[in-house]
Image (cartoon, rainbow, N blue to C red; front, side):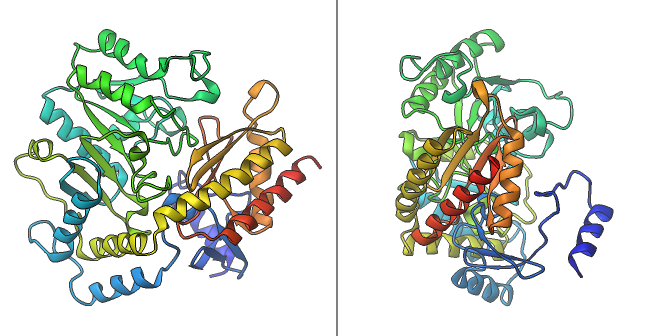
Length: 427
C-alpha cells in the first residue's frame, strides 16, 4: 500500500481514539537499530523508541534470533502448563529486582500489571483504599484510568470507590507554591493528611512511578520516596512501584528507577522495554503479598513462551552490553546538551529527568504552557529526521528516550536537530 492508502484505511477501520503524531501521520515501514524508515524510505533517528519500549534497538539480532528459534519450538501453552521460558523469566526477575521481590505474575501490558498489583494489595491488606499521584498514568482499563491523575486520559467518569489522589513532586510547578529544598517535602507529607481525612485511617497501597512518564517526566527530589513510603507504612499500606517506563536501566546506572531513591517496593509492575517491543506485562511481589492472590486465576497469554523468551533475550543484551551504564553516560551527555539549549532558547522553561529519560518543558511568559511551540517543534524535528515524544498535563513537554544502546554520535546528532528546530520557532 502507498502512504495515502494506509492513512485512509487507518481513519476508516480503526477507532478514532487511535491518534497519530504529526499533521500528516508518519507511516512506518521498517526499522533497524536506532533508526526508523517510513514507507517512502526516509530515515529517522528514533529518540522515543515506541514509547520507551525499544530498549536495545529495533529488530535486535540477538533478541530476534531467540524469538525466531522459540516460535519453531513452542508458541503457546497458557499458564495451565509450565514451560521453561516462563519459569526462567520469573527466576530472572527475582534475581535482578530490588529487595525481597520474588514471585511474578505475567500479563500482556502495563495496564494489566497495575490491575494485578492493586488487586493483590487489596487482598493482602483487606483494605480497599488506594492512593495515586496527580499527573500519573496507570493504563487503559477502568481501574487504571481511575488511578490516572490526568483528565486528558480519563475517558469516562470515575465510579470505582476508594481511589484518592495526592500532590505530585512537580518542583517546577509546585502545587503548594514552595521551592525545594526549603519546602520540607510538603508534597510527600501531603499523604498523611490525605489518609487521615479521606480514608478510615488505613490504606491498601500507594501506586507511583519513580519518574512520571505521560506526566512529562516529573522527577521527585532524592528524599521524596523515603519520606512518602515511611508515611505509607505507618498506615499499613503497600508500595506499588510502577516501573513500566523507568525499568530496565532507563534511568541510568541502576536496573530499576526506584533504586535511584533507595526504596524497596512491596510490589513492582513492569512492561514496555522489558521485551524490546513484544507485548508483555509483569507484576512481581514479595512472597507473602503474592500468595494473597488465591483461588481460580489464569493468564492465557501471560508467560507465553515466545514473549518470555524475548524478555530473557532483551535482559541478557542489557546485561552483556552493559547498557545500564551506557544509559548513565549517554544520559549525562544528553542532559548537558539539553541544558545548553535551555540557556540558548527561553522557550525551554525546565529540563528534567534521569539517564535516557529526559524532558524539556516548553513555556511562554510566566511559565504558561506553550503547546503551540511544541507542535511546531515536532514538525521541524520530523523534517530533520528525528522522532521525539510529548507529554505533560497540558501537552507542552518534549519527552526524549532513545534506546539504551544509543551512541554519543547519535546523541550529538539529536541535539543538533533539536538546536536547528528550536531556532526555526523564532522565524
